[in-house]
Figure 1: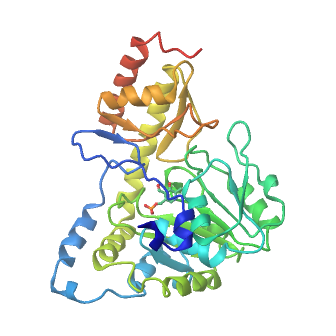
Figure 2: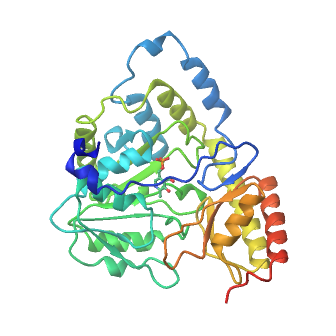
Figure 3: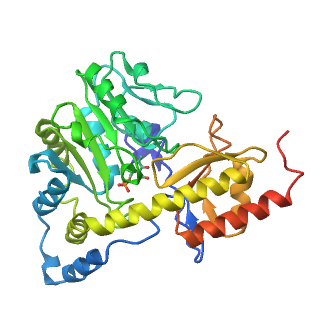
Length: 361
Ligand SMILES: Cc1ncc(COP(=O)(O)O)c(C=O)c1O
């Protein structure tokens, strides 16, 4: 029945999200969720929201949530935009701020939703190769462009970019919007939010799916100059008046307010990450430096595809990117609890000891 499709649909290559398996008792380390669950205060707030008021639409402007977010980041409310997950926020950013006559620039290895949005909104883009060691060189972005976007820390590598480098990029790139997707920033990377009041072309995107453990609630936000936020609001109000439902608003406010829980769980994830890196290194993995709640690693003798398939046999799922490229030997492993990490390391020891036949040629 595809004769009924709009032209653009024929050309789309949709994003493929990490698997959400229906099986129980899996150690799920494939989509960078938080192993600790949201703050107990979030659960209390959600229970209170299950009430008669659900018959009413939520606040279309999500004012109370914006106030809570602005307070955490010490910004004004008109510097905050909220959406249904940062994926929706990013979609609006692409449409509202990144579609110009010059190409949008982003790294060749990065969040794979970016080219998908470009396809959806017909945005011309150019990928800039990361260095051999997967680091990001700001000098490579000194060229005419219609915008720049990248995650910090980058995904799926996890490598953080220092704030001085971001500031040097912003100093040289004043004529287009620079979007920094800080989905994983709270796990040990410096945030660029502190630069927002100095650079009116800087937009920083955050999510509550990772450090605040609310992937299931779908809340994300953007922070930047009020003029950039106004563009996003215009697109949002031409798309969906109520992207944040009553539960999402109540839960997200409680999560933003419980700073102590947020800091404690982030610290735990970072500590476990460092232990995992040590263990993997001893097992012959090369692990890229990570400022995220995941690590990107390859083994010195066995392919990533093979190891991830063997882990799956042992009910542990990690993410392996199949496309033929310089990352095809790597696996992206989400940081779980200490117990999950021990299970992972034990499974890897078994897998790596049992196969000599499959060693790389
Ligand atoms: C770099 C990056 N940005 C944005 C997102 C989207 O997060 P969400 O839509 O859950 O807020 C993800 C999700 O994994 C991500 O990896």
